Length: 159
Image (cartoon, rainbow, N blue to C red; front, top):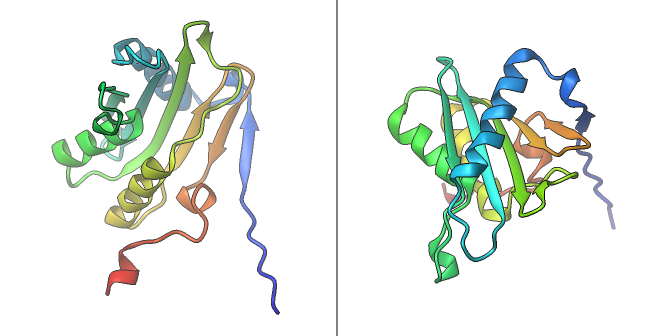
């Protein structure tokens, strides 16, 4: 038997360690949480994507009483970016979440469905997307979806 070990790399930063551009993007993700539609869970998530042309696109989670019918902030943001700016890769995606008590201390990771969409977005533009996960006590910086979704399933398996 052969054992395979996978290693991921995540950097934990403080807000003041971010570049001005990353602070702006993180702030836009936090601001987007106010536009979330979360009447059931009261868990609000915002995302902001900086595209290669410098445009910042934001999105929020949108709930529905029939839970599978809603969508996450990450997918809302990336689908909008891909449909409105189809020739612009996403350079960085920032994600922030809060509940009724405020922003979470610990960064929230994307769900499995969102991780798959992040992967497909990277594959679409053939370049990795940096990911910033916001928490009040730490911000995680991830270089791409390989560190979020090891052993991922992509279009290459369908050929």
